[in-house]
Length: 429
Ligand code: ADP
Image (cartoon, rainbow, N blue to C red):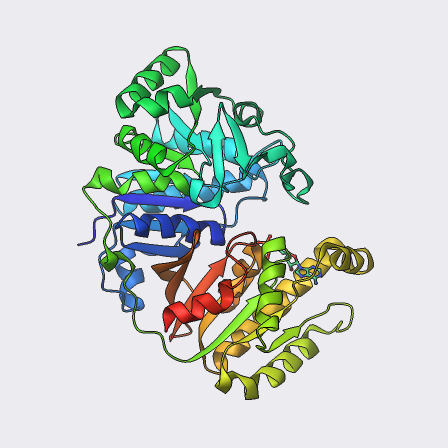
């Protein structure tokens, strides 16, 4: 009988991988589910011959930019399912840059989960020092700059123009938002507990917590032992396995042996992914650009890409990408429309990913959050077992796509160094 210690709800797919990766680093064996399953965990795992007992389950949703109401409905469905599997603590995961609109969805989902769990207090911190996200005096820093000057102020869907998270969250929730500041976090779990007691007495329901290092998060973790709901980026998760008597172990990231052909599909247009695509091509490896302006028919684009890849795959990894710099993207968007071009690219890349797997690819990297969601759906992957970390926030996973075993890595746009793609395949070998 599997005991799920920690039940997690993530607001997007790559974010779910990021969270799972940190739990695995802490020694937990983690199963990631794409969407809320209709059946109990025991059946879901049996079907994919997953016999390992899991310490944590992460339900990946696509709720970051839907309406607050829809995000709450999806999150509550995930909560009910996790509770039915016996989850002892619930973790809500959102982006480490606190991606949200003025209406949500972080605040509304916190409210809905707190109501359902009948709990009067939770924390909220996106701190993830391994990826240079730190919180100090309630302000979120990305590297050395405030969130509001990090480029995130220009995000097309969730522009973050204020780095003061107490203020940002207060605009989204009916609960009073407070701060557990660095002075308390630095002193340790007992002081954090005292501070939480004071805040509760003042009527605070959700507290942003400062943290600038992994040591801070480990100390914070101890103080969260009995909290029914914890919310944060993936960073807070590193301090939770210790509360269940679990310590880091290589066994947690054990995956079946990787076999088969290798490919990368990239729809992310972030600075990091642009550099990764350039590095792959500069290393003399084969890359094919998909240009929505040149190929208006998605079917033709898929056909062309697969015909191009088929003879090359035997020699090593291939890359199919729509990744481009912002001026090129703007040109596409002004001609075809923002939503239409995005949807076209996602559909096309997802069909290419599926075709590549049919050609024998069993080691697949997908770059881009939305792109990953589309590919996972097209590949019909209901669940993934989480393996070793390639770069902070990105693990290799093992899944079954239409009954075929597949190693897959879902990379959030901004994660990973320049040689991420080649490093990832070397690591599996
Ligand atoms: P990231 O994780 O970097 O944000 P996503 O996959 O989430 O990456 O988002 C990238 C978005 O940009 C997707 O909707 C994708 O379809 C779209 N896109 C990618 N390439 C192009 C392109 N060449 N022209 C227009 N839109 C594109």
